[in-house]
Length: 426
Image 1 (spheres, rainbow, N blue to C red):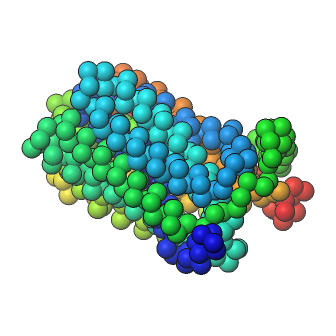
Image 2: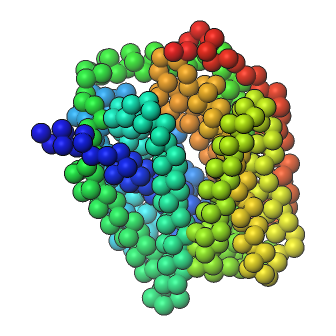
Image 3: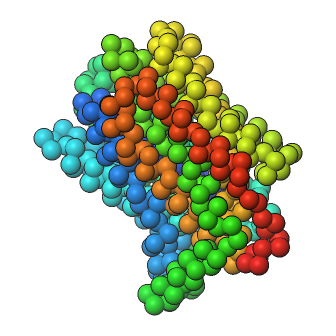
């Protein structure tokens, strides 16, 4: 009876909140943690290394995806992981005043990452199984929009709150409040989705571990048999090589003292810059990038997308060389950064959807592709702090501009296939 009631709930009542819940822990782990650890006194190299290491579950999630098919429903895993995520962020908040806060908080981030990666698998399963093709196309824009609402809230509003609280109640207490707020939001989401989310299908596809392993290896086999797959892997790895180095260092550069080559911004300033200017530019760039590709086609757009995607590298080289004091100039530069990412990122997403995913295991192969893409992002991120410490901010951003060359090369030379004629296509 409960399932029949849930199925009657309009998708607009659960698609936005589902993908908001997917984005919140990811951004809190990948970006907000960088600013938190900077305020807590860690070095740039430590922050870049540790906050990248805890991201591994999002790359490895295809390994345990088939096993989720063995138990319960997709809704069960969504609700459970949101609840566990809420409790985990609460425990993370409580770990910050402890003497060994770094070890304890990193353990909690690892738990949060595994939990959130599992949530992503189940959430996508609900979306694909509960909606027909027309509804999927209709609400795909809602996915991205509310994923970015989570980004605006966490990178913008909550970082701003943390910055203000740092000046009044103290650094540790400020970040305890922010992590507690994130935990409370996820707990509320779990209660809400328990009431409204459709089941997303029961555990009928895979009956036991043997079947799960057989399915997994078949998925792997067909993935690597795809036409031009080596080129495809090279593209999704190298397209983001420069961005992977830039992402972890940018917030550290903005927080660093001007005497050390940074911009000397307060945490609250970064919250305003990200939450208002950056997020608006990202959404605008994503929308315009989608229309641009729809008009020209992906093959004819990909090199231009690579150019725009790497605009932030030039922007931060400019900021590191000039070190402007004007907050308006800095916000304008951040707007260019996020617009470039939003516009250009459309290229790698559509490439994975149109050139890699099609086939009998479309959802699984898309998950594989995103995992490989994340790997190409994470490895440069892990070492970016050491490179930045060695070169200094100005030379680091110049180096990142040089590191854009592989992105341009793969965008220029990558072959495109006609997915309709692909022998493994559906």
